[in-house]
Every structure is written in structure tokens, then in C-alpha cells.
Image: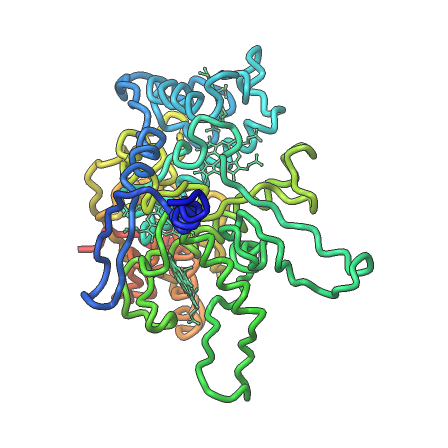
Length: 456
Ligand code: HEC
Ligand code: HEC
Ligand code: HEC
Ligand code: HEC
């Protein structure tokens, strides 16, 4: 064989090797994820999964120090959320939180160590709001996080700033560019899996009032159907992010025969709840914190670093492949009952029965007074801790005045208490509005009331 013919024989071999170098080295595992024959298969590379595993093992929880002894609200000066924990539980929580957020800097990352009650560090202010946010995720977004729940670790993993956050991007400078509006395209970006799709699919969908994600027109003609190609490109950008964040492909959530159909895998419904949850996190918790953050933590448009699917999931279809830390930190499961000086806050798990509170109202009024609000918050805390209990609300008015108006007033009072319970974290489906048997109940002060009773 001449050198030339040897070269000719080797060339295709070399080209083949080069071509294959772009592929992943076998073996790969494939898991069927839909009806057979539909091609709905998830492909995993055992090596990648093995590499990801150590980063997804939650830290070992500190042993419980017991619930006895004085309450944190009694001993400390400026404890607003965790006052009903015992000092032991509170200390365990502070130490755990330090290892999740600032293991190197320690307590000083959030505290002036000479005055722990002081709130002048922005990190402490942010951390307090983050505690509320985490409690809200675990109690109001169970449709997404189920009983697995999240803790600070889910997003932070030992860092003060989570690895995956996003900021709004400045608009394109149209004057400096003769191409016109690129609509964020043709600039391959990591946020959309290095495709040329719009590189900020987060602002339209993950904060504030969302733009519609559905892009397939419900009717054939553009008459009343405003779906556009540009909208589709942003939607696909978001879909690339979601797939990337979960380490899956499109068929994890869609039977790609029809992207619009909800008959595919149930994970699409989970994802839909996830979208709602992320919007709540960004709109109601993180974005308003921009005034608390120092300038060097803000994005180019002055917004705070926000969450998306990758913030929790970090490449896994369930964060930490489904390991739950929440069971070891019940204080993060929902808002705690407030610490009442000299009073006993209902213990989580304590049996609730009978009348939990009588909320009183002024003559002719249906708005909840500040005093009554404290009673409602306390009941809400007990309900959040006792997830199986449902309540009946009955509104009453006194018998002075017009009977029809009184009936209406009793109803409005029950609505006001329902709304206050909901605002304090109790799910709608745990509150029944009951028509009381006697709407008009005497003339005493407590005739103008709403009773909160444990449902039979
Ligand atoms: C990530 C921020 C953060 C870190 C780190 C942190 N704390 Fe705190 N700490 C807080 C927040 C927020 C509160 C207020 C909680 C509330 O309002 O319910 C608080 C309150 C306290 C209080 C109550 C002070 C008072 O008088 O009001 C004590 C005591 C305390 N922390 C101790 C510690 C100790 C000890 C460490 C280190 C092991 C630590 N904290 C680490 C955020 C932090
Ligand atoms: C859903 C994900 C998520 C969870 C859960 C979460 N955080 Fe955060 N946290 C964020 C994001 C996003 C930021 C903003 C990043 C930045 O600083 O720009 C942030 C920022 C912070 C900061 C400011 C850090 C700095 O140096 O700027 C603190 C402190 C903090 N979080 C504490 C907590 C604590 C305490 C918990 C648990 C009670 C918690 N976080 C739970 C997402 C989360
Ligand atoms: C984690 C689950 C998940 C993954 C993975 C996913 N999607 Fe989606 N997709 C959804 C959800 C949820 C919606 C509907 C969102 C809404 O309506 O609020 C949706 C909507 C869509 C739509 C709009 C359908 C309509 O009704 O007009 C298209 C198109 C789409 N996805 C394409 C894709 C493509 C392409 C991929 C892969 C790159 C993908 N999706 C990956 C969950 C997912
Ligand atoms: C606050 C943290 C957090 C964020 C942010 C988050 N998720 Fe999740 N997600 C979870 C947890 C926890 C679970 C596990 C629940 C369980 O035990 O099944 C989960 C489960 C899921 C599942 C179900 C997986 C399965 O195989 O059953 C899907 C799908 C999903 N998430 C999609 C998303 C999408 C899409 C986004 C972004 C729009 C998102 N998630 C954002 C915490 C989060």
C-alpha cells in the first residue's frame, strides 16, 4: 500500500473520530417516559449523574436540642418570626442557617456580633424576608414542592449568593446598530442552552404579570388570535431554560406530537405550578428587596438577583434528587404562631378543637381591627402547624337596626376574617363559610363577631 492510499484509507476514519468526538462517550441509560412507540425517552449519562450526586447530598442535620425552656421571643429583643421557638431550637436554627449561607464568615455575616438584636446589616434584613419566603413556599406552594419542601440550602448550598440567579438585561442600543431590533436573538447564551433564542426569557414570564406562554393559536385565522413568531421564540427560550435547569429533554413534560396538549406526562402540571411559584418568589419577595441590597448586588437595571428553575433544581429533575431537609426543620414549614408574652402559643401538632377564636367587630363595621388581627394571626399559626384541621366561619351581627342589613354585615365580617386567615397563610380550601343559625345574637359587645370553629 502506498503512503497516499494509506492516507486515503485513514482519512474517513479520522473524520469519523472527529465527528464522534462531539458525542458523549457511551454508555448511556435511556428511560421510557411515555407510551411505547412515542419516542418519549429520557437519556441519562451515568457518569454525569455520578458527578452530580455529591453536590446533591443534603448536609447532615444537627441533633435537636429539645423544645423545653424559655422561648426566644421572651429572651431576645428583636425576634419577629421565630419567637415561639425555644431558645434551644432557635440556636440550632441559627447555627444551621449559618452553615447554609455563610459557613466561612459565620454569625458576623448577618450580625453585628456586639449587638445581635441590631438590624443594620442588609444581610439580616434580607435573611428575615427569606425566612418568610421559604415558609410561604412550603405552605402555599405544596402543589409544587409537595411534602419534600425546601430550606435555604436548596438554593444557597453554602453560598451567600445562590449559584443560579438572573438579572434583567439592558435593552439593545438601537442607534448603534443598523440591523434593527434583534429581539435578543442570535447571541448564543447560556441562559437558553447556547441556542440563538432570546436570551432573557425570564423577565416576560417569571416576574410581575406574566405574558402568555402558550403560543399555538386556538383558531386558524389571525382574527382575534394574536399569537406571533416572536412570542414563540421567547416561549422556546424559556422551555430551553426549563429543560436545562432540570437536566431533562422536552419529552419529560410534553408528548411532542402536540406541545399544547396537557395529556402528556404529569410533570407538565408540576412545571406549571412551578412557574406560578417562581413568579410569587420574585414578585412578592425578592424584587421588593432591591431597596435593601447595596448597589454592588444589583443588576445593570437596578433589580435584585432573582430565582428561576435552576436556582433550586441545579440540573436535577427534583432538587437534590428528591431528598427532603424540611422534615428536620419544621420552623420553615410555614409561618409560626407569634410569641405572646405570658401566653402559650399552641404547639405544632397539639389537638385543636371547638371554638378557636371569637373575632369582635365595632358597631356597623366589617373591618378587622388591629387587636382582632393578632387573634387571627395566632389562629392561622396554629392552623399552619396542624395541616389536617379545617375551620368553619360564622358571622354574627347584633339585633339593633335593619335585619337585612345585619345579614349582609354578618356575611361581610365572615369574608373579612376569611381573607385575613388567607393572608396569614391558611389555604382557601381549609376555610368553610357557614351560615349561622342565629344571625342576630343579642346586643352585647360580643354579638358582633365571627366565630372560628374547628370543622366537624
Ligand atoms: C443568614 C443571616 C444570619 C446568620 C448567618 C445568623 N443569624 Fe442570627 N438572626 C438572623 C435573623 C434574620 C434574625 C431575626 C429572626 C427573627 O426576626 O425571627 C436573627 C436573630 C438572632 C438572635 C436574636 C437577637 C435579638 O436579641 O433579637 C440571636 C441571639 C442570633 N440571631 C444568634 C445568631 C448566632 C449565634 C449566629 C451564628 C451561629 C447567627 N445568629 C447567625 C440572621 C442570621
Ligand atoms: C428560592 C431560592 C432561595 C431560597 C429558598 C432562599 N434564598 Fe436567599 N437568596 C435567593 C436569591 C435569588 C438571592 C439574591 C441573590 C443576590 O444576593 O443578589 C438571595 C439572597 C440572600 C441573602 C443575601 C446574600 C448577599 O450577600 O447578598 C441572604 C442573607 C439570604 N438569601 C438568606 C437566605 C436564608 C436565611 C434562607 C432560608 C430561610 C434563604 N435565603 C432561602 C434565593 C433563595
Ligand atoms: C419541566 C417541564 C417542561 C419541559 C422540560 C418543557 N416544557 Fe414546554 N411547557 C411546559 C409548560 C408547563 C407549558 C405551559 C405553560 C403555561 O401555559 O403557562 C409549556 C408550553 C410549551 C409550549 C406552548 C404550547 C401552547 O399551548 O401553545 C411549547 C411550544 C413548548 N412548551 C415547547 C417545549 C419545547 C420545545 C421543550 C424542549 C426544549 C419544552 N417545551 C420543554 C413544560 C415543559
Ligand atoms: C423553590 C425551589 C424550586 C423552584 C424555584 C422550582 N422547583 Fe421544581 N421542584 C422543587 C421541589 C422541592 C420538587 C420536588 C417535589 C417532589 O418531591 O416531588 C420539585 C419538583 C419539580 C418537578 C417534578 C419532577 C418529577 O419528576 O416529579 C418538575 C417537573 C419541576 N419541579 C419543574 C420546575 C420548573 C419548570 C421550575 C421553574 C419554573 C421549577 N420546578 C422551579 C422545587 C423547586
